[in-house]
Amino acid sequence: MTRHTDSGLKQALRAYGRLMRLDRPIGTYLLMWPMLWALWLSSAGKPQEKIFIVFMLGVFLTRSAGCVINDFADRNFDGHVKRTQHRPLATGDATPLEAILLFIALVLLAFGLVLTLEPRVIQLSFVGVALMVSYPFFKRFFPAPQFYMGLAFSWSIPMCFIAQTGHLPRLCWLLMAATLLWATAYDTMYAMVDREDDLKIGIKSSAILFGDADLTIIAIMQLMVLLALWLAGTELQLGFWYRLGLAAAASCALYQQHLIRDRQPDRCLQAFLNNNYFGLAIFSGIALNYLFKA
Image 1 (cartoon, rainbow, N blue to C red):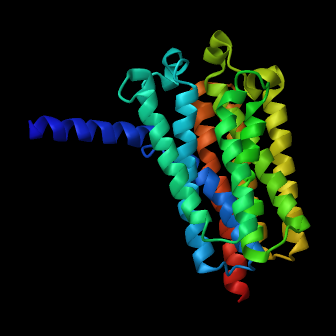
Image 2: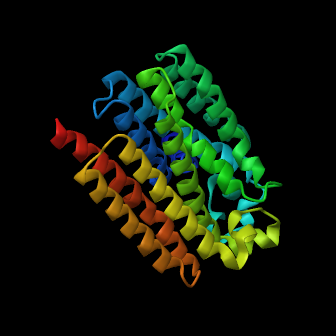
């Protein structure tokens, strides 16, 4: 009896882990890098320890919660898409009620962390939760939900600036614009993987909206991201290491364009995953600039 109970508990925990995408941390990394850019740039490379810990844990919890609510919203669609047909709600390994309870638990934990920061950060967190909860449903009617996801993924930036400095300078909006465009670009690559399935079941995506112009539009967005980040570095007078990081990120963007040139789903997925190195390159440039400047 105990052995069967233990086995059932392990299966449930595995299903919850898959709901939270613990086996696929790429989304956590893509949410983490812009947050780290903002923390380091808003603090001249010396973020407060408590703020750093709160935001790092918050990234993990909110990304996990976002995956859970996304799977709940898509539970009737995932079984019809090759890439998602083995997700826990599609296979019956977890129930919709379990997903909702897990989502609530994750959001409450994240909110508990935010409560340790100043009131204006708490206020901004409500907008972040609203973006996270509403995003999965935008795919039903909004022609470019990737842009909306970009807004959700960039929302940590004003939260970081308020937590660290108490105000929202022009630099904050430059970083937010860069992150929004970057997220839209890489999530369009991701949407290119599912384009045929999405067309069949009626899910909206920027990959469908852009059509044959997808490669050109992604390239334009990547150029705008690099321009915004260059302007941010110019405003703060960041030096050689930051420019080296930008150059490395530009190389990543070129490689991604090479990968998606034939629109093959597996290569588009590779391009999407490569964006982790894009974010790392920018953060490395920022961190090294302040490290060797000190």
